[in-house]
Every structure is written in structure tokens, then in C-alpha cells.
Image (tube, rainbow, N blue to C red):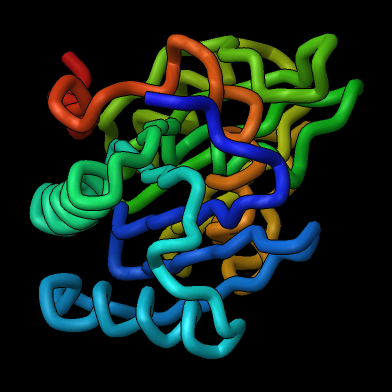
Amino acid sequence: MAAPEPAEGFLAIDSSSAQAGVALLSGGRVASLAWNAGRSHTVSLLPQVHRLLDLHEKPVSALGGIAVALGPGAFTGLRVGLSLAKGLSFALDLPLVGVSTLEATALPFLAADRLVVATVAAGRGRLAWASYERGPDGLPRPVAPPRNATLPEMLDALARLERRCLIVGELPADIDRSTSILPDAEVIPALLGLRRPEAILALALPMFGTDLANAPGPLEPIYLGRDG
């Protein structure tokens, strides 16, 4: 499979949770759509891809690569997004790149002086989370591996790290009260801290044209078992 040319369009798909999104890089510009898909990814995802491409007059045949969020996240949503990404990759003979949903959540908030704790809803009141610091390349570098935990379990683990941290992503409404045990923690409000599909593109672009751009078959969603 040939490496994509820089002028070609790149499409990103994120169906990791109820908060879904798609992004398009074309002609040096990025456009995106984000919406609350609930549990209707099967119904809403493909129409939103077509809507984004139509709004920017980009035929699907002009795409040069596909990026997809691999999770962790919701079982069904991840399957829907990955199936669509694989289908487009196979049908159009395009390189396909998968990226971590948690890394995409953390990316816009990375700073040299603090950890970024990225979260995504894991169902049944639980969170998938991981902590990152800014690497030399400006990309997320894991500090603690992804986990599936309750909010108190996550906060206990962060307290043991004894690091200044910024908590972002999909969080319970009572998070501010719960973080009282972390004096060096700051919580980004939910509307500001939700991940954006543009971050999927930003993580994926360096991988196109490399061995990390997979044939459609090997990519699988990331699922996490419960801590403990």
C-alpha cells in the first residue's frame, strides 16, 4: 500500500463513547463534527462521515488515509467505528491507523509541569483512565498504564503518585467534591475537557507512510478489565 501524499485528505473516526466525532484534514485545513451519539453509533456514524465530506466537497475517493480511535471505551461503539474504518480502508485501498482514545483525550492539555489524567466512560459508573506527561516530541508519554476503575479507585491511585495533575475527559458530575483528597489536582469542566476528533488526526498523521499504518485486519479495539 503506497504512502499517502500530504495533499490528500485524511479522515478520523471516534466512536469510543456516547460522545462521538469525525474529523477531516484536507488542503491543510481541519474540519470536524462532534455529537452525542448515545448508543446509536450504528445509525449515526456513517451519515456524519458523509455529511462532513459533503460539507467540504471532498469525495471519499479522494481520501489518502483513515484514522480510528481504538479505545478504551464502549464495546459496541468501538466495534462500529472500527468496522467502518476497516471497511473504508479495504474498499479504497487506504492506509489505516489506530490510536488510543485516552491519548487523544490527553493531547490538547499536555504541559511540562504536570500530569494529564485522561478519562473515558467505561459503563456502570466506571472510568477508563491513564496518566500522561508531555514527551520530548510533544506527544503523550504514559506514566501509568490504562485502567478500568471507579472514581474513588482512580483518585486513590493518583494520590499515591504525589504529582500535580490535570483531570480531563468524561467525568462524573460530583468529581469536584471527590477530588478534595488531591490538593494538587485540577479538573477541567466537562464541556471543555471532552476529547476532540482532531486529536485523533494529530496522533495518527505521523504514522501514515510508516509500518504503523496497518492493513485493515490486525487492528482490534482496546478493552480493559476491572482493576483488581
